[in-house]
Amino acid sequence: MGDADDAAWLAALIAAVAPPDAAAMVSARARQDQLTKPTGSLSCLEDVVIQLAGATGQPLPDVTRKAVITLAGDHGVTAEGVRAPPAVTPQMVINFLRGGAAINALAGWAGEGTRYASAQRPRGDGVPGDTRLARRVGRWSAR
Image (cartoon, rainbow, N blue to C red):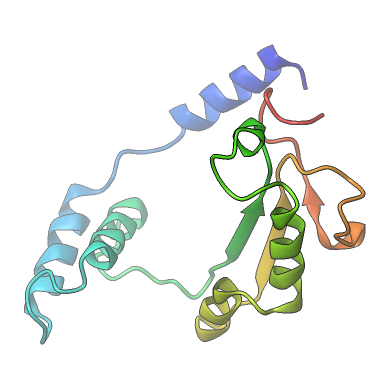
């Protein structure tokens, strides 16, 4: 797709997103406040549950279908030293693939495997090619 096609596809996708279901969110908040725990003690986890209720329209959403998707990529800021050097990313990805990262433990606890997607990472970085789902993320990413 070209940039114009990408923009039209994204605009159509955004237009198809319904606003959150306010009643489901109110019910989810009320449920959180009734649980045997200090109010707000789960912090942002409570907010995630309430947002999920709004997105699904269900005060107690069904999350039997779930996935953990891990994205990895290097971009211009790595060259500026803003975060770890580019050589660290392949090592992190190999750790994801071997099941040694914290996200693997969380996914296992949730009863899911992990999926890994490459986002603007160079080939030949030592990560096996058949283990990544390479997709162009945006016009600024590698083609």
